[in-house]
View (cartoon, one colour):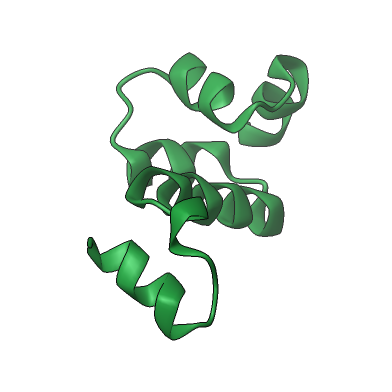
Length: 69
């Protein structure tokens, strides 16, 4: 059982629904939702291209580019 599964169990959640990748994506999504700073999320995720971060988060390209300026 991985660290994220162990944490899910400790929180009383079904560990089958929580993996390292889903937690990574959730954290990035929450940071973006709160700050609207796509560039910071890009750096956090280690993406070399902003387009990859935009696709990863599933945000609209125009909105992300406008907010990152």
